[in-house]
Image (cartoon, rainbow, N blue to C red; front, side):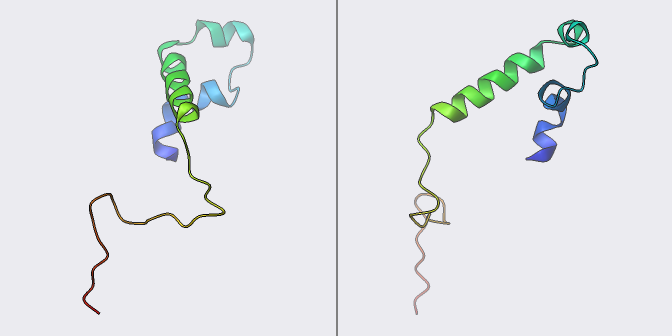
Length: 66
């Protein structure tokens, strides 16, 4: 996940010295990051702390024969 976020880190962590520097930077990553986080926030997420998640992909059974 860290590698996927590398292009966005300067925009996310406030790595610019001023608001003018931030505004002058390439704004495409800003729009992409906004889409990514908005899509994630709109999704329904399981209650990780109360229900065990199925570790296998959909359609894969845990039939071991034992």
